[in-house]
Figure 1 (cartoon, rainbow, N blue to C red):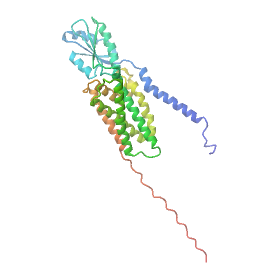
Figure 2 (cartoon, rainbow, N blue to C red):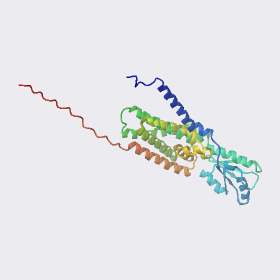
Figure 3 (cartoon, rainbow, N blue to C red):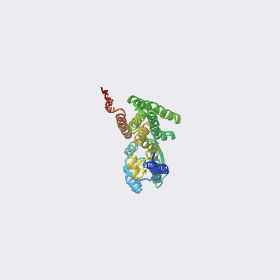
Figure 4 (cartoon, rainbow, N blue to C red):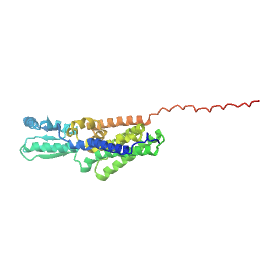
Length: 335
């Protein structure tokens, strides 16, 4: 190699340092940045009261500024709002000495925690000691399983897809092998998630609805990742791996606690929030919750897109005719 084409000895260390700094910047924004900027902004809560106490309910709703988004409703309507996760908690005013703070285990724990603090504080200004009522009581494992299942499903499928590509390095992975990897991941990773759920809390209701939703989640993730790995090869890991870190940092929060930039750029589209919130409702026995229906449709969409990218046949390149050896001239001897 000539000296003109020889790279300076300091190029590779410089590239490595710049790559590491860029990775730290991206991951800092995606993970710790979302957590460091958490602040309540129009958190939806409700105050309910019968007709004689509606005036008091409106007085309560007048406090909180931009941090809270109060809704005044009658008791039945307020509980329906909580069941649909349109509010994170309800302060019930009743004739008598004390108010009741109503929460739900089917709501994201971050939203429940904020609602409990806010509503308990509002109730302190009223006569009597406030009561706490929890709809769909949830254990510690029940709070963790929905988010953990989504994150582990993504990671397990990602490793399976990357290993398949690596084992076939230098060769094209067949359509049958990719399909086997997607379906195999759907079955085995779902089994792992069910095993963890049963190990962490044997009382969790692992019904057919829960199992079907888990299988759909895992298969959709596996198909989408397989499609991107087919298009980009192992380079797709630069996109798929950081998304795993988004799960606890972004999908684990309610949007009203996230900075508006994270809410619009990450939370609004991340697939983890659809799988996490849908599974949370199913585990807590609320199969008719709107986020279950939304989650099913989003995951079906991911599955279809992933299967199209994974299984769509590629055009075979036409083979160029091999060059024919030139005919050697026949030498004629002079007579």
